[in-house]
Image (tube, rainbow over all chains, first blue to last red):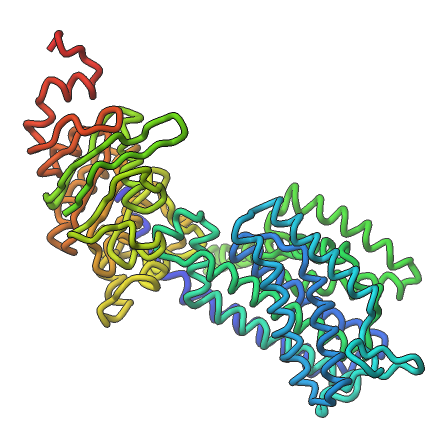
Length: 343
Length: 239
């Protein structure tokens, strides 16, 4: 052994993870009980969208941080999920939860198709192929639009557009925000169950290298497909949450460029950290709204995001979340140092 | 026993292995030869990364061409890599757990199997340390721990001794010598370090230009003039 001095170091994992879980739980509880009552209608709707975009960013980070794959189609899949949620909700009048789940499942199936090239391609080529898929979804959505209570398979009404039915327990904006946050937490738990379990270990091996995974007996095809299906499911759920929040979706709101924006901001927020997607969701929706509130054009946000991306690529590979936890670590050490120095 | 029959591997115009036939029954077998002799190619054929152009390889009478690459770990073919492949964002224990996901555990509790493997390679205190925080030597030992869990039949090590300090190298020898007795797997060891090979391997196969030029008890094989000529670059007349 080269460093005998480290032998007695206590296990790291047991000490850290509960803290993280408690922090997450406390943050979620505060968000659930305090936020909705304190917010105006405008901000309620903004945070509902931010919750949906957090789930979408989570789907990007599952692929990128866990498996090492770049998908630029996730915002398109959000549109797919939104389409199916609206279609099923208007067409069958089912409870919101059923529409939510079927949106997830249908986007997972489309996500699976998006992921098929991933079995043969990597890196830039995979990114370009998935971007083309996002483009294809954009063309379909802008050609056919979203269902809004009309007849037929497409469900386009010629008269007044109907709103999507919200969950029975969450009709108002405040209640729906709470509902959206609970859905977000459930999505996080779903991802956590994967990462802690067998799929997470297999993904980590694939990310290390494919020879490593093969020599360890990992069925690379199955686990890559599973990752794309899970990411598609999350994006679909995000689409349904968004559709339920706004009540209807705009056919022009799902260009392929939004998929790139979603990916870029997931990197800026910090794909490797659990709160990176939350930062990304807030930046995508709350930050432009904040600028609007200050009577500054919200589109300036795009320029800020560009600068943020450059900053992330050059100095902060783990994004804002990584910088925050570095800062927290430094503070903890500073506080710990003071304590030691004291009596 | 490793059975290699008339094995040829062609990479375009280059012949990695050329009609190689061998039977390797010893518990710890060395595989030596100059650079480009086909040592790593042979390991890659056994792992399934390289498909033989002609010929076959088998373990204990089972033809390996029938076993898909990702099923070979469960069958019992394990390896370490020349460039170590420890997963950096998993702990040492989870690195082993990731293998246990895909290999038979015979109903034994995983925690016990992991603790046993870490103990065997001298990493008992490192179970909760992330792969990225292990040093080069600990990573090599962790790779061996990953290879030895869950009923292995053949453990192949590609230059495990490269870049190790003297006392680390001695510990590695000790681990390799005890490995067969501990888990019952046959060990195939590729290394340029003749001392390591002589200290651990009962038999040695010498490759040159993709063919076997000698096989037998390690000491006598390494003393053969044609082996010294191929391996040390000494002219046969001169020795």
